[in-house]
Image (cartoon, rainbow, N blue to C red; front, side, top):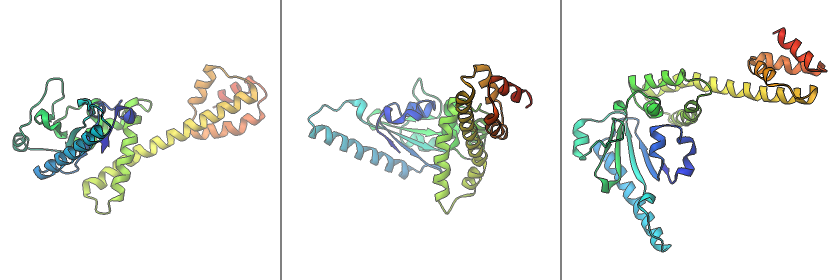
Length: 253
């Protein structure tokens, strides 16, 4: 996944560590299985090809290429051995979470060992890409987030993309099938919430037209109604002539 600029990654900006990767042009290469040495080298080669393309474009346009315009590579791997990290000469930098290992600066590359990331909301989306207990813990954390929590909305958008990408693959591993099954309730819950919010907005608009502007207290009571109650209110409001009718109906619920 190539992210050219911060402006094109607004959904990622609330996703903690992943958003930090995308603050500047980035090439993000996620692996479902542990990345091999050859696969990491292939990613570095892809980065060098993109860097060469960016340099050629700058030269053709007679513009000076800024260092911040050259993408960085982030290799996301569920696990990685110490021997493999050592073979690439990686180091951990101050100011970065554990599990993020940087290659020499000239290579503009980091290997992210998902299994070593701390269990914080900042790493939630990345840990969803892990395997086994790491992924299971991340799903549990996502399930208990409040519905209006900003991390959840942005994370769920990426979860849906992951879910659909996995569905396309006809040769899913057992872990992937289990992941889809565990994400399904989250998907359904979010869809139901979207329907409920839509019903709320529609009912409130209809009430404002029917009986005049309703106050914030009544709006909060309406927001506390279930989808079935909202549907019933949508039918009942046709008989309302004033705010007292609405209050009487709400008191009966």
